[in-house]
Structure formats: structure tokens, C-alpha cells
Amino acid sequence: MGKIRKVIYPGTFDPITNGHLDVIGRAAELFDEVIVALATNSTKTPLFTEAERMELCKESIKAAFPSDGHVKVDSFSGLLVDYAISHGAIAVIRGLRVLSDFEYEFQMALMNRKLEEITTVFLMPNEKYTYLNSTIVRELAKYGKDVSGFVPDCVSKKLKEKFKK
Ligand code: COA
Image (cartoon, rainbow, N blue to C red):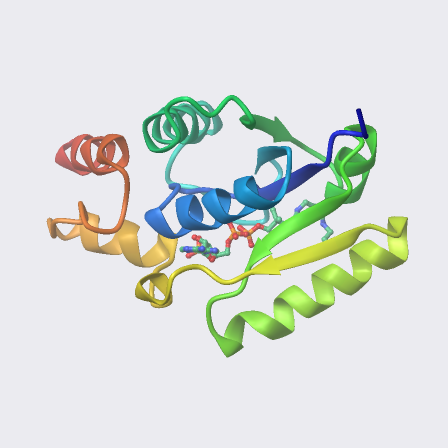
């Protein structure tokens, strides 16, 4: 048997959205193992704690890919390339939604390749998610809007709880 083709899908996931799940599904069709890797040292100040983000990722992945043992959830701190290399990953997955994503992603992909010769694979989520990001979801939820069409059920429930307080 050949080597397992493992890839890393990193992000802040504050919270995970249907757009992220769409990218994970596409990656899972192409590779043997997808590790959804939650960055704990993100430069962002998250709404959800690391434990909450992790739990929401695990729960929504279990619901979206019920019998699929080859999507795993993990967390990492430090540099993404170090994490990817130490886990024997062949590539990093990133989603590209709109042109404005490109500059940041291009810089990150080239820097990661410079650091460790790691390849970045860009996948395009379904176009219905192009306008989606976690900031918009958090903001809508904060003002009491229903976000159930944009995020998994467990996330929409957790957002409601968070903003009720
Ligand atoms: N659907 C919906 N939203 C999506 C999406 C998709 N398919 N893909 C990305 N997004 C959104 C995210 O929700 C997020 O929204 P937000 O900014 O409003 O919160 C935004 O697009 C981008 O976030 P994400 O994909 O989670 O990436 P990130 O920019 O938060 O994460 C890391 C970046 C963690 C991968 C990067 O900072 C990293 O590697 N850090 C580790 C340290 C390191 O190695 N640094 C050197 C880098 S060269």
C-alpha cells in the first residue's frame, strides 16, 4: 500500500461555517486524511474559546461526515509549517472564495513554501458561500439574526447561547 496522503486544513474557526465544511468535504474526496487544525495562537481575538471552537469543529464534522473516519480535528500553536511537517502532511489546504482572499493567501502560501517546501492547495467552496466569513456570522448572531443557513446546527445554537448572556 502507498503512503497515506494527509493534508492539513488550518484556520481560526471562530466559528466553523458551512463554507469551511464545504472545503473539508472537497479535500476529503481528494486525499486520504484531512486534519482540520485549529490555530490556538491566531493573531485574532476569538469570540469562542479554544475548547469551544474545538468542540464545535468536532461536532459539526461528525454530523456532516457521519461515517467518515478520515477527517480529524486537532489544534496547533506555533508555525503551521512545523505542524504540517511533524505530521507528515503532503500539503496545506486553503479555501479561495473571492479575489480579495488572494493577496493574503498568496503571501502565506509562498512564505510557507519558502520555510519548508510545503505545497498549498487552494479549493473553491460552492459559490453560495463566497460572501460568508466567521466575522459576518458573529455579527449577525450578535444582533439576533438567524444564522442557521450559514453554519452547522451546533454552531447556531451556541451562538444563540453566547449572545443571550
Ligand atoms: N467559508 C467561509 N468562510 C471562510 C472560508 C470558507 N470556505 N474560508 C475562510 N473563511 C473565512 C474565515 O471564517 C475567516 O473569517 P474571519 O476573518 O471573519 O474570522 C477568514 O475567512 C479567514 O480565516 P481562516 O480560513 O480561518 O484562516 P485564518 O486567516 O483565520 O487562519 C492561519 C490563518 C491560522 C492558517 C494562519 O494565521 C497560520 O498559519 N497561523 C499559524 C502561524 C504561522 O504559521 N504563521 C506564518 C504564516 S506564513
